[in-house]
Length: 280
Ligand code: SF4
Image (tube, rainbow, N blue to C red; front, top):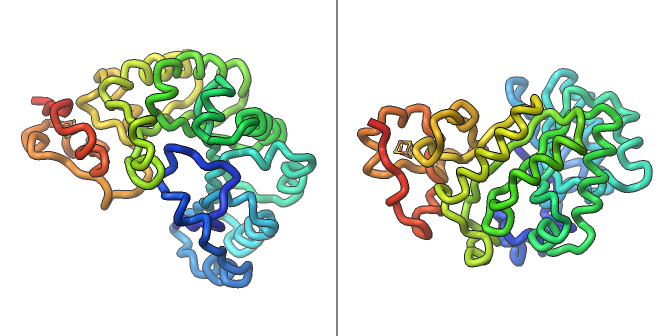
């Protein structure tokens, strides 16, 4: 189960799948209400903590600690922009609780501060995110980097991969994610849109760099026919939004349609269907 702790965010990413003009007005649930929700999470499900930016809640650590107390073995996954973890004592405060098994999924867009900050629309965000990742790793937390592939960053993903190898020892894995064109990403489509097939060779080179350095790599929302077959085994993941995915008519005869991660429905009106060619 994934649950947004708040819709507030200290970034305003141009490729956010939420229309942040709408959500910045939304309130957040009380701690008591969240505890009730946590009580009811089925034992078989993980607890995915999302937002907005979940770390902005003053009771963020209390909520994680409560989830751990209530469900001693449940896997907790926190999706975050990572900025708050750079703050004085914040990671220390988290590490005082025995929260394992837990993983932090942090969005990093580029090795270039100016590229990352132009996507988050917040000067200085790259610096805080990178420091936040380092602090989590220093404390021994499991960290996954999440890189959205978009017009502004795709050409230099290999350099971004080299930066990751050099700076983030102990990272659990790197996930490249093709964009869903909803919310801010749709509004800013002229700035962020890139064809999957155009970006794929750059993602493959970045993946190769990471794999050679023994990092785990996953590719989310990469329809198989736009990629070199060599990387298909990395590309079977999705972000669990099945209803927003589709296959097209041409996929009917495709040999790999059962294992294909499918195509974002929101991508097709912008890109058409021509780049998807069945494997026969
Ligand atoms: S043709 Fe369709 S099913 Fe086959 S790999 Fe491409 S998107 Fe997937």
